Length: 109
Image (cartoon, rainbow, N blue to C red; front, top):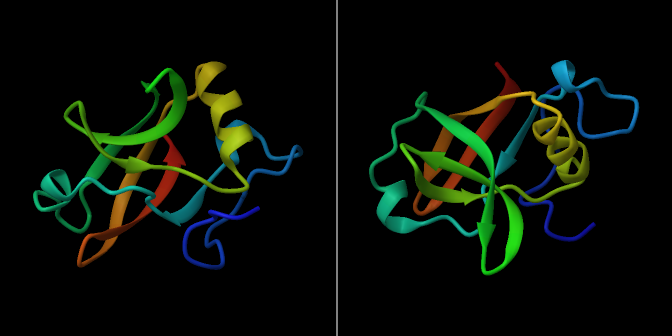
């Protein structure tokens, strides 16, 4: 699927149908990072993962104190959405910040 954002996935899980929501963990580069919010991030900071409405579409979003940092796109998207709707809560820990690009580790809390 195009848009998997930056190469091979790290971490266990990955979004296959056989992955339990409590084991869905992965590393990914954020899509459409918001520069103003990215400038406030620190490596190791824990952000929120949620489903948000953007232009009439529901998207997977990483946010900091309610402000969008960027989106989550990849092969894991359908499973992650299903898990969040089912009540599993996820956090995204900032791994790297390079220019305006942000790589995070997503896992359930």
